[in-house]
Structure formats: structure tokens, C-alpha cells
Length: 431
Ligand SMILES: Cc1cc2nc3c(=O)[nH]c(=O)nc-3n(C[C@H](O)[C@H](O)[C@H](O)COP(=O)(O)OP(=O)(O)OC[C@H]3O[C@@H](n4cnc5c(N)ncnc54)[C@H](O)[C@@H]3O)c2cc1C
Image 1 (cartoon, rainbow, N blue to C red):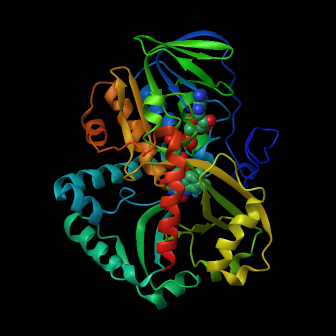
Image 2 (image 1 turned 90 degrees about the vertical axis):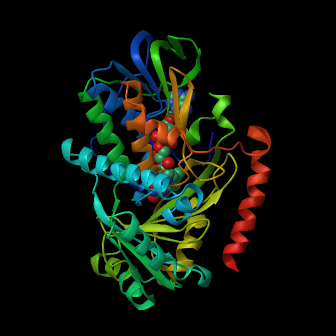
Image 3 (image 1 turned 30 degrees about the vertical axis):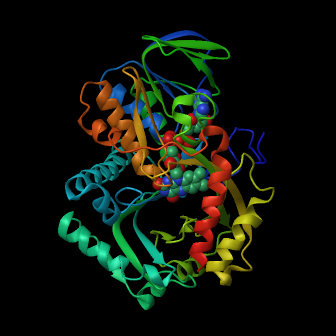
């Protein structure tokens, strides 16, 4: 068992769990069920797939090992950046303009899908606009301007601007930002409430959700037979949506991802005035570090701050202390702010930081490895898998066609290699 305190509800003791709305209790699977599609995992990927499938008239079951949103979806920073994890300057250099544009357009559709779902299902998840990316290192100066111009000229996206050091400081009182990129059409939200809202919408659309129903095994046949400790599902299609929590369930995709732990804290409420001195708005902020610092204000004027990672099974014993040092590096003025909540979560990264989406068999789909850019891309992945199962695979094929690599050392030896690589980039960041 991980070193994290869990509430009686089964969620980690996080700011999000403390402010959750729209929570429903779903039963555990008991006995034998039948469905067109069995989705394994109740986060953004699984719920987006389930909801979109149910709306197309399919009979869907979701099996979640713990509680809905127990994984990264209910614990994450809530920052929804535009585009893919790699910016368009990078995707253009690797894939050329046409394919890079395709990937950008899909990511824009993901943001549209989020806005649409929040509105359609009246999900109370504090959806806000804007994201500032603070440049922490001289050699990255010029990148905000270059990206702003590329997006405006080649991607029909005129919503970014470059901020100089003084303009940046007016918006975010963080130490050491040399300049920034501000994207007024990026988003932020309360991730657990969004996840719970998606689950409620899926249940209302007819999806049968089972919590505390860990899948222990499934057959790769058609139809597939999926087993939990107290029940089973026979389904024509399976969607594997376990991401960083996949563990040993599917060895054929496990080696393509590296599960990593990332950590967050929530300060005490700072009061509106002090909070606004820290960040002058409700937009999200992150820096350009390899192990990124990310933060935003909550609607009750706390600083929600994410920083620091580890690459092992366990979490640090005192997560608040672990994250606080990253927060104080940027905001020494918060020395006296009490930490009310601190928690961690597991996400998965891929070698090239592009998502790993595809099918292992005609009836077995998977999506994972969003590399810290998961809110929008997981929502997109779930939707395109639903479309593919319903017969339209055009967008799925674009994502499934992205190059993938196996981590050196496979599932056994990937950790030592990763630790060395991370150490290298962290040191490089400091130079
Ligand atoms: C601390 C942190 C901060 C982050 N910040 C951001 C951010 O600001 N912006 C951003 O875009 N992304 C962020 N991410 C990444 C993002 O949260 C993830 O990419 C995204 O939530 C992945 O969604 P998912 O549904 O694929 O996986 P998850 O939400 O992890 O869901 C997987 C689910 O599968 C379940 N499961 C696993 N095995 C089984 C099984 N055998 N049977 C049944 N169920 C099973 C798990 O219990 C879990 O609930 C962050 C991640 C973390 C951890």
C-alpha cells in the first residue's frame, strides 16, 4: 500500500476530494454481465469513451478498480494547455506542417469537447480560461515569440502573446521568469469534479458503472471475457484506460509507458488580495523546467501548486514538505502560508512524449502515455476510440499512427534508465 492517506470515501486526502461535488456511489460488480463494450478504468479516457459510446447507442460497462476519478484524473493540476505535449515547432520539425496541423486541430477539438461537456451536462468544475508559461532559462528566451507567430500564421490561432519580464511579473509574482507565453484560450478546471460530472453524464446516458471492481484478467478472444474478483463481463469490445495505474494488466502495452509520480499541495486560503498578488487572475501557470512547476488559484483563493516527481512505487512520506520547497523556490513570499493538503498521483509518460493510442486486436483498444498533457488528450482519446468502435476511425488512425518506442529495459529495467535520464535533464535545467 502506498504512503498516502485515504479518506473513508476511498479517495486520497486532497483539496479536490475535500471540495468534490456531484459524487455518486456506484456498485461493485457481482455476477456475470454482458455488454457491447467494457471499459477498464474510470478516469478521463475511460469515461470519455463510455459517454461517447453510450450516446451512439452502445451498451457500455465501466469497471473502475477504486473510485471514479481515483487515478490521475481526480488528482491532477487541472491545467489544459492547447495543442499536444510537444509544441507545434517540435511537431512541425518532426512530422511536417500538414501532420502537425492535424495534431493541433485534434487537440483543439479536445478543448471544444471539454467546453461542450461542461455546458451540456452542467458540470460544476470551475472551468476558467488562460495559461501562462514562464520562461525560466535564458536559452529559452525567444520561444514565446516564435511560437506565438507560428500559431497565428500557420495554425489560425491568434490567441497567444509574448509577455516581457515586467508584463509577466504583473500577472505572476514568481521569481525568475524572464518572459512568458500567454494563451488566453487555454483552460483550467477542478479535475475531480469534471471527472465526477462525466461519470454522472455517462450513467444518465445508460452506462453501467462499477466501482471497487478491479479487473484481474481478461481473455483476448472475441467476445472478450473480463474478470474481477466477484464478477465478470462478456463484451464484444474492450477499452483499456488504466494509464499510469495499468501495472501488470496488459504486458503488451506496459513497456511503452513509464509510470511516474507527481505531487501537489494546496495552501491555506490566502484571502483574495494576497492571492491576487501571487497570480493576478484565474489562469493556469507553468514554467519551462523539465520537471515542471505548475500552479493556479482555487476559487477559495488558495494556491494549488504542483512540483516534484519520483520514479518509484512509493510516495515521499511527507508530500507537503516535498512540494513546498518547489513552491518556495518560486514564491519565497509564501514562507508563512500553511499547507492544508498535499497529495500525489501517477501518470504515464512515453519515450517521445506523444500519446500511445491504438488497438492490440480488432476488439481491444488502449490509450495511455499522455505525458503530463493528459486532460485534453485523454478526453480526445476516449472520444476517437468511441468513434472508431462505432465505425469511423479517421481521427483514431491519426493518433494511432504516431510513432512509439519501447522503454529501454522494458518493464523490468526501465526505472534505472529513467532515473538517470531525469537526473540528466534536471541538472541541465539548472545550468
Ligand atoms: C499530480 C498530477 C498532476 C497532473 N497535472 C496535469 C495537468 O495539469 N494537466 C494535464 O493535462 N495533465 C495533468 N496530469 C496528467 C493527467 O492527469 C492524466 O494524463 C490523465 O488524468 C489520464 O487520464 P486516464 O483516464 O487515462 O487515467 P487515470 O485518471 O489515471 O485513470 C486510470 C484509472 O484506471 C483504474 N484502473 C487501473 N487498473 C485497473 C484495473 N485493473 N481494473 C479497473 N480499473 C483499473 C485506476 O484506478 C484509475 O482510476 C497530471 C497528473 C498527475 C498525477
